[in-house]
Length: 126
Ligand code: HEM
Image (cartoon, rainbow, N blue to C red):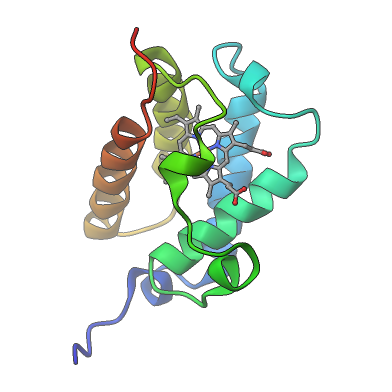
């Protein structure tokens, strides 16, 4: 068993992810490339993303307890995500990470993960 603190603990818990996702969604709202993919009411999705990220980085399993296994590629199947949409998503998240108060190692781990995940979510050519 590893005694390493999780990134979740290191950054101060769920509050960090709530704030990160708030900033991310502010950018989504302003981005004509992907705002149209999201529903009119952004609040439920915002909460889901914040809880998913908290769980992913070692926090409580609230996301899976309420929604089941993440299966993110499957959950994104209804949305046409090409390279352009993936880049737009990543731009918004990079901006949110840039203004987070975290040490360089944690920042890099977050950026590497988001880049990998956003690439993985592409499901449409072009
Ligand atoms: C690559 C571009 C991406 C696009 C265009 C995109 C778009 C969307 C959209 C439109 C929704 C539905 C929101 C709603 O119903 O309110 C959603 C949900 C979600 N996305 Fe993404 N997404 C992308 C990448 C990612 C990545 C990389 C992650 C994880 C790191 C992620 C995690 C989630 C989660 C957890 C939800 C909520 C799913 C649920 O439980 O209902 N998405 N996304």
